[in-house]
Image 1 (cartoon, rainbow, N blue to C red):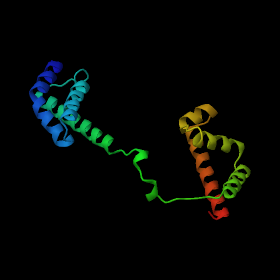
Image 2 (image 1 turned 90 degrees about the vertical axis):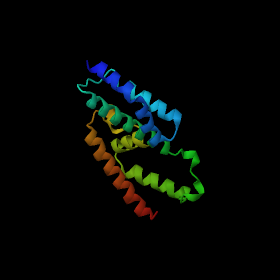
Image 3 (image 1 turned 120 degrees about the horizontal axis):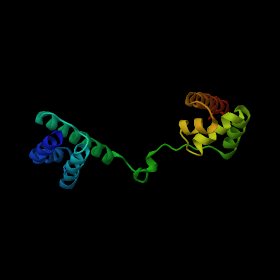
Image 4 (image 1 turned 180 degrees about the vertical axis):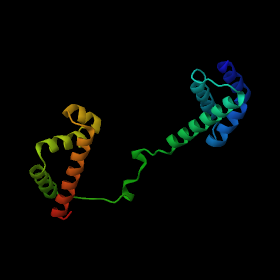
Length: 159
């Protein structure tokens, strides 16, 4: 019963849903895609008891999908950023070498391993915890201590 009610509600509201999507997205193709996505999300998974409930769910899901589309459009690629507007930071190579040497001396081997996995390997805390047989909280605590040591080292170097 709920499936047929959702289908009939969607068919009756399709033009209105399209109109709502157009107000958000200002693009015919995007609006059609969003209406179709709304139907795909709700067609099999939703059990409704009244046509008002079906209408509310259709409009809410459509609105959320439109908002997601708008958020995707707002992302900026790194290539489009003008690097001349960005502040430039330069470190002399000997400063970098001193920083690395101080960090090697101040970090434990375990902390160096965690730091390497985060910065060079782009592992997230869960992956590191699993690989090193630690808890996620222990990895977070170690990274907090590592960042603190890095800040202190940078202050020592006056950078």
